[in-house]
Length: 253
Image: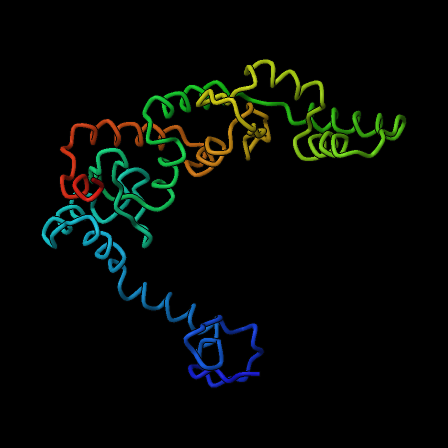
């Protein structure tokens, strides 16, 4: 047992983070108190993280304030007034492009900051946005389960995966193999030949295609919304002609 110096409560040792600089080997504050302190501090100082990032990118206070003002203190893609805003930059040239929320910033990174891949994503979502008959999928799932009971398969890792597909995505092994052939064993968005994952609409449960891990995650971060992807394409196009940050380029030499 150990007493937290913040809340004055006796707690188990696992409720304190490790800290080798302390005699006891653990922090004096419990994990709950530290978490609450960080959240309260971030609420009182919403721009502190951005200010540290601005200093790291060589921005003056005036340049930083102008950047925030141009973005209207919100993400320049999804327009949300999020506490978790970050400074977005080009990883090739070091160019500072604007202010984004961490979700949109991560999504751009997953799509390799490429307008071409994002345009491919728009075409992919447009072609997949069709009405689907949910009754058909429910009937097909019932039929596949009855076949399993009549002809039980040997339990292997492959058969477990097949049954997982049937249960979660309502798709048979033959349909899955047809999907692989239709996309030439490549991601339907970036055309990379890598490990593929089933992509589906979370509203209709319609299976849309096979995507690599990055594209599948990126589609989720953009919330399957074509207008957000179009805004991201416009954002990248607008910032392509910005002069690179020479300080950042020199620091990479």
